[in-house]
Length: 244
Image (tube, rainbow, N blue to C red):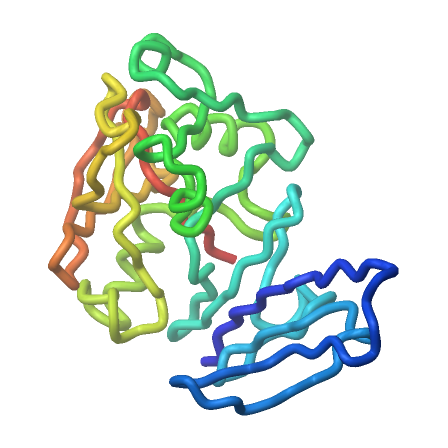
């Protein structure tokens, strides 16, 4: 499975640039390449194992959410999953998901919300944001938070994944699990300096057919095995991994 790692660097050229201005590409102190920059408007980096070229997100092994975020995807046995945790901030009907930045606000919220773990926007963008259970509830009853044609998987769909590859999906299956942190109903872990020691994912399976609690799965730091988190109250903040 080819993974996409695409990074665009824009070179803002000013009128004072002259033809002799040069970009040097170094490796361990050695110059590999010298390129005049007066005619360069962008530099695009690809992973050595390929991926989806820029401008074509949503085709091939990728999918785009309503905010324009692009996610690599992987097919495992009969299922297709995102290889990244969700980081969208709107439902597909355009409804915004409010950002919560304090533990006190998080603990008193009883509607859809998201947070950056440890108040770290950069890391949370890379690893996905944390959603409370009302985001899942809204996705089931109104408009999905996953891209069109995708959804928050049920407990049964996760079990189908485990049946195909086992619970040790971190390194072997292409699922590409990461330790992204989580928060409880009191907002623990949202403050600056929080340390991520696990990842928990919501499912769309509710306790007894209701949605006051939702089934979750957990991966602890230092482990490659996903374990059951059981039914969890909606105020908790978990990651979401979408399935097609």
